[in-house]
Structure formats: structure tokens, C-alpha cells
Image (cartoon, rainbow, N blue to C red):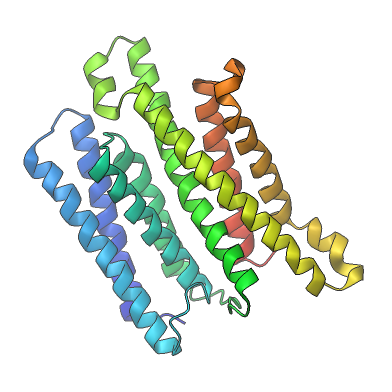
Length: 271
């Protein structure tokens, strides 16, 4: 169970990520200054550090530093990994609209950890290498798909602005080519991780009683994960199928992430 200090650290971290989103909104409105840019990096760095500190304190209280051992751990790790991936992308290939759409996802993950992680403890003990691979790949895939959804949202907005001849506003979000390239890369990585996660997850069937296997396979988390896998498989066919290029790819990426979000919720609620 997380302590009040750990929850407080998460709430402060969420507030700083919200400030990142607000600063990104200012940049999108044309207030692009060095001070705003430095503010985004400072808020993001401190927010990630506070979230990691909360994880360290939580692990120390549990007496174990294995990640993903409860809901609090899982949700905070998702938020931290997403924040780090976004920071890496912005450092190497800056995308104007990425912080604007990725930061709110991080905020929701941190708030979920703060308000639901303490009420819904879950057995996440990593008792085998097989299960470790399953969880690492599954959570890594969620992070990749979150970035893909953020870039897809930015693509739709940039595309709409271009259609309206708002060229300067579209450039602030990011070029369509760059957004599409990052989206495809994230979906490719996420799809590979999700595939490994599904394969290793089905290995748990050996531990499920024979009379409960059909019910386990029909559970919401399995059904949603399978549908999401099919959606992202369509996205990966975009380069060879013009029907699924551009706007449809962006919409499918966002829809796939909503399905993946449903999987995360189902796992946390153990359904």
C-alpha cells in the first residue's frame, strides 16, 4: 500500500506534467520562447525524478525492488517509461505537438496510480522468466502505443490545419511526414512487444484448470488485447495498402490505444 508521501510525490509529478502540457499549448499558440522550452524540460525532468523517487520509496516499504508487483508499481512504471520515451524523442527529433498530447496520458496514469493503486492491490510476483518477459513486453507495448496515439492525434490536427491553409500553425505541431514516420516506428515496436506479450501470456493456460480455460480466454483483457493486435496489424499494412494510409492510420492508432487502455484497466481490476 502506498503511503501519503508516495501519493503526494505522484500528485506533484502529475502537476508538473500538466504544466508541460500547458507550456506545450503555449508553444502551439505561437508563444515559442526559450523560457517556455526550458520550462518544459525542467518540469518534465523533475516530474520523472519525483515519480521514480515514489517508486523507490514504495519498493523500500515492500522490501522488494522487483517492478510491477502491485497496481501502484505498474501504473507508475507506465507513466515513467512514457515520460522517458517522450523525452528521448524530443531530444533526438523534436516534435512540436508530442508533449501536448503525451503529457495528459502520463498525468492520467499517475492519477490512476495515486487514487486506485492503493485500493486494488494485485499479485504481480515475478516467479518465472516466462512471466517476466510477458509483463515487460506487455507494458513496453503500452508505452509505444501511447506515443503512437499522441503522434496520431498531432497528425490529425496538423492535417486539418493544412487543409485550412494554416501553415504556420501546422508546422508548430509537426510535419505530416515526421509524425507518420514516428507513428509507424512506435506501432512496429509496440506490435512486436504485444505479440510477444500475447504468446507468453497464453503460456499461463497451463496453470489454468481445464474447466476454466474457455472462460479465461473469453475474459475482457484477452479479448481486447486480441482485437488491438488485429487493429495494429492493419496499421502495419499501411505502406503496402494505400487505403489505410494517412488519416485512417492515425484513427486506427488512436482506436488501438483505446483498446490497449481497456486491457490495462481490465488487468488492474483483475477481470
